[in-house]
Image 1 (cartoon, helix red, strand yellow):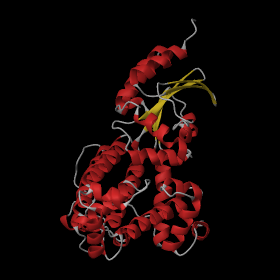
Image 2 (image 1 turned 120 degrees about the vertical axis):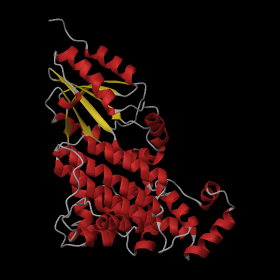
Image 3 (image 1 turned 30 degrees about the vertical axis):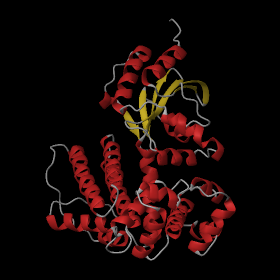
Image 4 (image 1 turned 60 degrees about the vertical axis):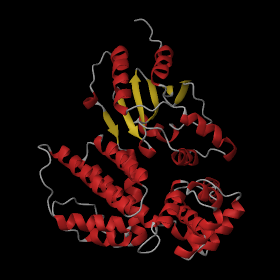
Length: 399
């Protein structure tokens, strides 16, 4: 048999898709094909999951609704990704860099490289791999034959469980149950629009077991359709609550895309819980008081979207088309706190989340959140939380 030139095939795959392609033999990287050169490869956190795929073609779901696909042939693995239909935002790239421990001085180059990866639907990439698979393995596959690894769902499940544990030790693994009654729908959307996380958790403990309407003849399709309805309701409720519309709708698109590739009803239910909780938490963070002003909502949305950047009153004033002195004065009048206090409190809240749910050091978190030094981050964190980052992590390490 004539020897297969994997390098030639992968070089053409990279040129055709505009997405990085790697060739692995076992655990060893043999070659990398892409016009994009990155200081660290974003596939690294998902290699273990990808290696668990024994079929000819498969894929795993990454963070921020991206995917990594694999084609196996005679002990050789071809991995392509990250695959995403829309470009990564600046904040998403910062999160990726944070997860990969990209040094601060390399962040700009890394961001530029990720920006240059071609956006493409997952289905298109999988169809390209099906063609390559036929050439390599002589196997005719369709999209429905390809399995997804659900490692991301396991991560989401752990995060959801940890968040519930923070609120109460008595929760009994609640999941969001969709219902067809107007009363239940109104209760859920009202909670999301008010950003009332505590009320959501209380409600989930005793949510009425009302069945949803028949939306499909097949059970898995039924669960997915209910998920889509819930995503629509939650995203619109979040917008009414003050969450930026682009943010809310982008989240909805991402969650629905992840749901569509799932094959387990339990995974869909878990993702649904995580989705509603995330919308509620995001609204909670942008609202200032029971009746937030338009200005405070605009400021809060901006801070959320740019949490990993250095945020100043000057930047905010330009974004909101008003003078810095007027913005500072007006914000203080409406909320009772200064812009600086609000920004640093939000960064502290994000730091708390990262200290609880990631293995990143305080120094890494400080850099990610835009602080000039570890000492500055520690000082700010202690001011707004009453303890140092290390003390906070020690206190929550068992949660």
